[in-house]
Length: 130
Image (cartoon, rainbow, N blue to C red; front, side):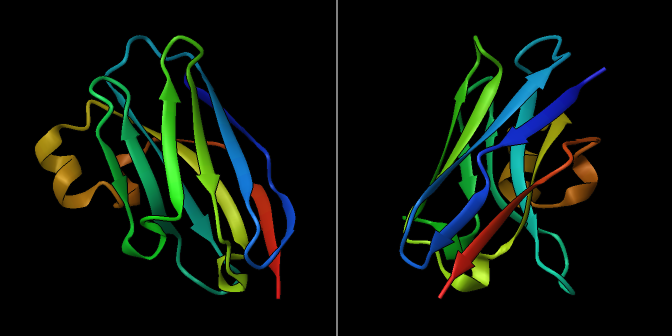
């Protein structure tokens, strides 16, 4: 059974940085995509970034491109999201999620579609103050 545990959330001022980590267990091989989603109160869950562990392909939602970096350590089964220049509107609970066998074609078109991800962590709160 795949289990995901997030860490690294907290309170930061606008313009500051945070590093989120997702520790995955139960992965049988590298044929997984690990993504970060976020959900603010009263808003829909939004895909933030994704990495395919097998080939390292990375995906970002447009609003974070250039500020956030996702990386993976296949040996440690850990995925890290470094978030720079954070904005107050990015205050949300951030979730780590895993998708099995997300092909390049599917990932290119719709990595952000939560339906692909069958395993989710409990989430970590990120609060960005003005």
